[in-house]
Length: 155
Image (tube, rainbow, N blue to C red; front, top):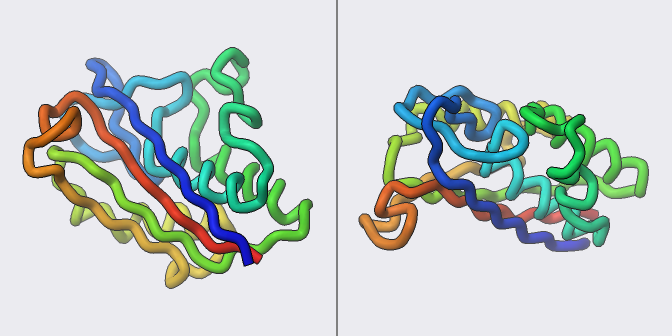
């Protein structure tokens, strides 16, 4: 059994879609990034790669490579899972938390869980997505961006 932890953060930007867990979230701003800036999926990918000691998403999908400009992070997650499988690993479970003052995410949790589970080829019961605020503290509380943590267990 191996445990992995992932963390990611992206700042808000104008004229971008807000994509979290592969879901298009209606909001006035999106997140800035080389890919679609899906902070949740990025944290999940780093947790999985870390558990397998296979590096991080920057190693697999460098932001200096134009092939990944605007990339769909769910597609990249599928690639991470393919790499895990090729190296003999299986996902036991994933637990994640999105930290965002706004927008409220409770109505999107189910679809985020489903998107992540489908990309990983696992049952949705093995994927947890939670959302919280930081009570208006820090950069997320000041509406400067969104962060996410993820932990996973693989064997």
